[in-house]
Amino acid sequence: MKSASPFSVSTAVVALLGAALLAANAAAAQAPAAPQQPVGTPPPPGQFHFPAPKNLQVLPKDWTAEQVHDTMEKWAGDLGVHCDKCHTADPTHLAPNGRPRLNFADDSKQEKKVARLMYKMVDNINSNYISMVDNSGVPVTCGTCHRGHFSPEPYVPPKEEEHRPGPGAPQPSGATPSPSH
Image (cartoon, rainbow, N blue to C red; front, side, top):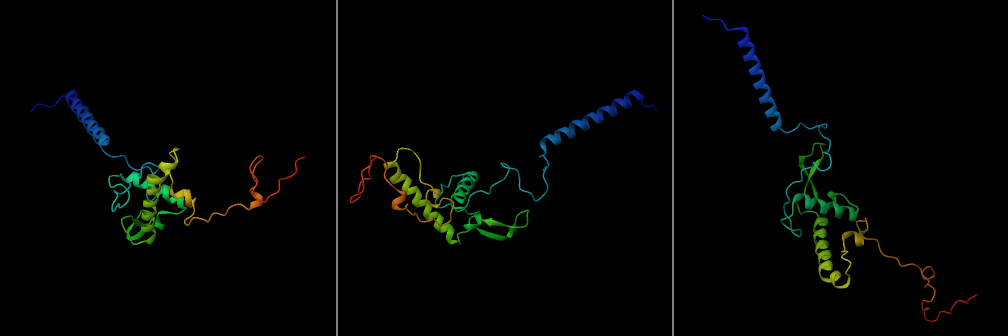
């Protein structure tokens, strides 16, 4: 029996190591990157996966999850509330932080029903009225009335003495003009 030369054994070992390295690099390139943050912390902005929208009744049914989420964030800011104001908690599905996830499709909260009605009202105002009186393109939003409060605060006009007409403006009837110096 002939023994293998030291040169051919070392060549075979180098070839096998090279093939193993190539295979490992190819596998690493195809594998998703391991998370770089501790478990249970929220993902960095832009890396959150929003669930596909379900039960859309007033928003366009072809909207993406991101479009729905962005709209909901805007509404929440305009009203000064958080998502759980309109959406119910689902104790059977916990988030990594241990809190119940929200069931966005559930319709049991009255606030969600009111939000849909208010959306229709705002859409109607913008479509049928604002476009006829205002060419600025500035639409009515939830914030137009709510201004960061869940219930809009009543408008209180300034007192008469705080709201004096400027120079040259017509005086209210019965008012005596101020003396000029």
